[in-house]
Amino acid sequence: MNLSIILIVPLITMLAVLLAQNKQQVKWLSLAGSAVQLVMAFILYFLFQQARADGQTAQMLFETDYALFSSLHIHFHIGVDGMSVAMIMLTSFVVLAGVLVSWQIDRLHADKKEMTKEFYFLLLLLGLGAYGFFLSLDLFVLFFFLEISVIPKYLLIGIWGSGRKNYSANKLALMLMGGSALILVGILGLYFAGGHSFNLLTLAKTNLNATYQQVLFALLFVGFGVFTALFPFHTWVPDGHSSAPTAGSMFLAGISMKLGGYGCLRVATYLLPEGAKSFANIIIILSAIAILYGAFATMMQKDLKYINAYSSVSHVGFSLLGIGMLTQTAFTGAFMQMISHGLMTALFFAVIGMIYDRTHTRNVDEMGGLMKKIPFIATIFFIVGLCSLGLPGLSGFVAEMTVFIGSWENPDAFHRVATIAAVLSIVVTAVYILRAIGSTMMGPLNTEKYNSIKTATWNEKLAAIILVAGILAIGLMPNWLNDLLKPAAEEIMKRIAGS
Image (cartoon, rainbow, N blue to C red):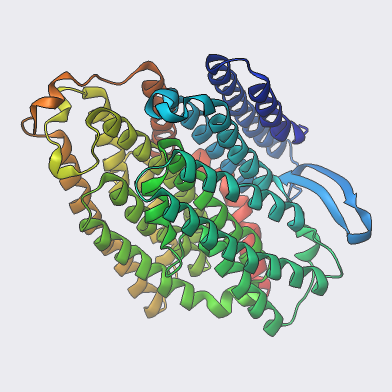
């Protein structure tokens, strides 16, 4: 398979959107392009599995390598392993769902109804940046695609956001650009230390001294950690999520935060194993703090978006905890958690958007009894809530259990205590999730104005079904994802063990 097609399809879709004559064309072209992206992701998965079954043992498959700037050794070098394929599939799910839930964006933002084309263009550009990031094997190109994902977020929040949108957009942009600056310095350090090469696979064969690895690892892990809400650099998450439009929140939590987690594991930990071992305990401590702090902070929230935003800080902490544990099972669990959280939190924000469009409030105290009026939306709210608290049969349980098992493999008392602390957060999660469900969906209708609200539209139902299907596919049949991720986790573990 030529992986360039995964980048060409969104590019063609974006061009078609710009040339569209009216809003309906913009919507249907965006939907068609997003659907093709999902189909391409499934084709990539099946071709990748077939290649592995046929005995192809290369670390990266379907590589494409073109020289962009030969003098600086910058190449358009792309390829995939199991982790890349999984993240591309996640991106295609969220992109399609985001397009669907934005179908009424011109009605919801009547003052910007003439900017529908720009809105969908920015959504598609975010997807393009994510695809390029997960495909890149050249660190310069990887950084380029990472930067593509920052400016659209700022514009989506600043133009189509709500509440303190200007403050939130500026805060998000400044925080993420600060993280990008650290990443750029770390990448340049690798470039000069690794024989003037940005090639990920070449750099993995370079033996750097321990001190150099520690410095570069700190730069790269913190830089990528800013994107993935590493404590204490998480403060942009609640404000950014709460002010973003529904699709923007879905992209921020479902995809953008995963760019950071992927970079922490694929770039920082894989290329700098000595640095990873030196900072492992610090990562574990910060992750445990994030897990518990995020859970308790969520209990204090009344706004549904803030509930999901703070809970995301907690849930993403499980991924970072898995990375810090430095075991193969924990690595696999960390990536499973990224995939699970991407689907779950995108669905959560989609449902919150559906509720807000009908009630014009996100405050749980102002709701109640909505299941009687919007049964489909209420059912989806139940499913995603139960996934968040780790109900067996849903993706959250599989991912978190894999992290816990991988964390417990290390017999050291410090690791065991951190694992127990992380497990205890599940109790707090159950409290705030069940309370949110009860306050919004159960009991009598809180106000008469909700008597006339309508149930979900076709596009909202389709978006929810797509994301629920992904959650169930992992929760009920996790082996396919485990088999996809395991070889890549083994490769990273070899680097850790051999350093």
